[in-house]
Image 1 (tube, rainbow, N blue to C red):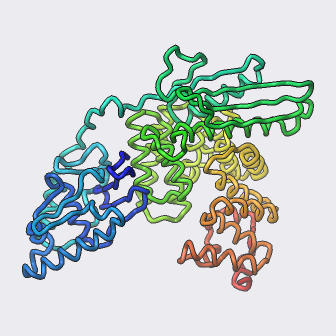
Image 2 (image 1 turned 90 degrees about the vertical axis):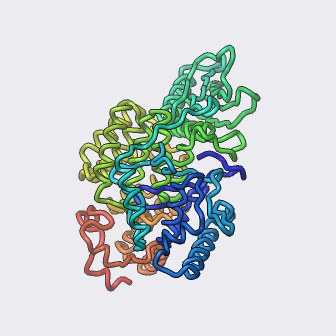
Image 3 (image 1 turned 60 degrees about the vertical axis):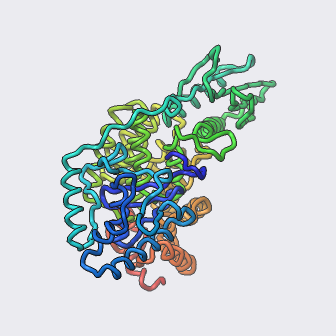
Length: 535
């Protein structure tokens, strides 16, 4: 999103598929009042986002006396201003007019109809609105008929400064660098390229483009000891943005591979974060909004689904990078796993198409293969293709935690428990500083629980919760593990934490064949006859 005159991101209005309003921080602040939603939609498609009070009153309260209708309008406006928090001035009014400040928001529909932001497929304008006023009903019917016959307008040409040009990353080695350093630099640059478009070069250009980054790899050997250092620098000002190092005895081969892979993944994670943010770490770069959306997705467990999905869609349109389609599809796993309310009937077909397009565009992108693997398994229920995709992913990039994790998940679902357990362990032992660490520990908890190693399951579950205390799936499996051990005290405490997040959760859900995982019944993790007596 663009910045407002206050220096923060804009509010966002989505009108197709039901009205939704998102604050600059991504939180959903959609008003509950149907008439308030109708009034916002009416203002959004009005010239200059402005309408007379009398027009709004006649549209939404045509069956009331003038004084009563005016009072109802004042009440709705007051309620909306409270909903916009500190940005109360986004909705303005005086004695005769009501309007929205166009400098503070973006929308998928305006006076010309659907904009380039609109996603209209199988979605109706102001879908689900139940305002019964006949004037509003007529207006809404006319708008829907008009927009059904009118495709979204093409994006307006952007100023040159807004064009998304891939950032330049130059690889550099010291004079003492050997094959190990070159392998590390190649692995890091290849891994980062899977995440986002980059112009990677082995030689510094005579005139480096703005914001060029330099990845320096230094390798020093003193007898049996080897010291490897990776640093990221800003070419323009010469500052070092981050530095990582690893020291090891070349004769002690045990553990060296995992340590090197962890160093590679740490460098990939730091590079992706560096590209997405300014060197201060505070000011987001508009050109990489999708990376920030990925961070938010893992931080909030997929909340603000529509807002995040639209960010990935816009980034794909801008870059034609298929990985952003894969991230859009991956979002669906949070809807399914988090038991979130969403249109699940149409979701599988839509996700299947996104996976298909992502794989067509980038069949050799290890990250795309890993993400599509999990969508196939979790959203589409196809564990065989999930394994094939994840297996290809790790063969393309052996230092690929997501690939190893989802490969392990697929193997477990195919009944190859020990192989799956080892694959997830590889992901856990080699991951860097990625925002999905808690997910790897969650799946480690599941793998250990299914294997009957309940103490390890509890340890990994606790680690997952230390990163994300409000991640309900981890709590569900921890609850099952405590019940399997007969630890009623720990199970009771875990149950209370889970019910804080999911008030409708009941212990009886564990008796359902597919909850939280059908494999729990296959491996007889819990004696269902004992559950009512345990708590």
